[in-house]
Image 1: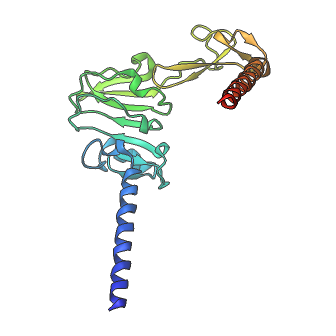
Image 2: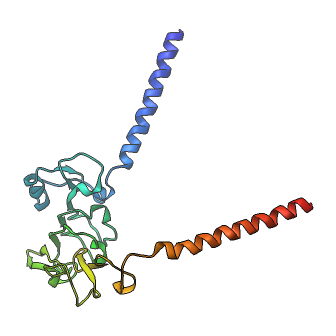
Image 3: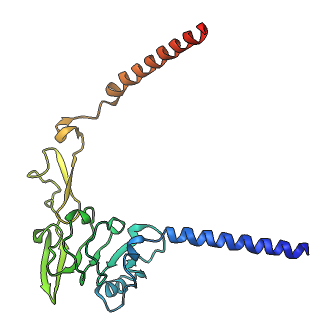
Amino acid sequence: MKTVCCWQGLVTLIFIINICFNASTRLTEHQVCSLCGGSVLNETVVGRFCSSSAGWIDGRCCLRNVKTGDPKNIIGLDLSNCSLTHVDNLQEASSVFMIDLSRNPLINISDEVFQGFLDLNYMILPEDIVCPGGNTSWQKVEVSQGDRVCRGQKNMCNQTGWLSTNCPENSLCAPYGPGFYECSCAENFRGYKCLRQGEFPALRVFGPLAASTVVMSLLLWATQRRKAKSI
């Protein structure tokens, strides 16, 4: 009888562990891949791209052939025919190369949705939706069979990496998604608009601050100790 109870307890424990494991696995799945029911079909643009890239399909996503939970593995996203009226957050798929948003009743898409999408080079949108960043942010834009296709994201910085017209002097320009760029100070420059040269004087700035903090702490400790003694 004791043996039977022991086995029942062991089976119950294994069952509970299995439930917890499955729940944690579901939490680590890519949420963007389940924004719409179904999965990527082989005959679609994203499906053919996934097949040629030796990727594997997870819901509406095409992932690199490395089965980990890293969002950077998403290389294709097919949200076509999903009855989407708006798109707010796709940052989980910021490493994506191809996105299909066709056949959706979309009203408008903010350019900021695709901020940081450095590898995005192919988009399919409804005909009345403008390519992120405008036509000037893409090498080729064409309308065909009710879809707008945006190909080849342009680098908003010039070939040398410097962009003096938009970034301040002594700074470097880097692409940051369709129509976006970001400026960072060149080596040995810092501060507002990269106008200061040399390393940040951390000791001169934080030294007096640390010293004053220590002095104030000692004064407060001494005051509290006197009050404690008087009581």
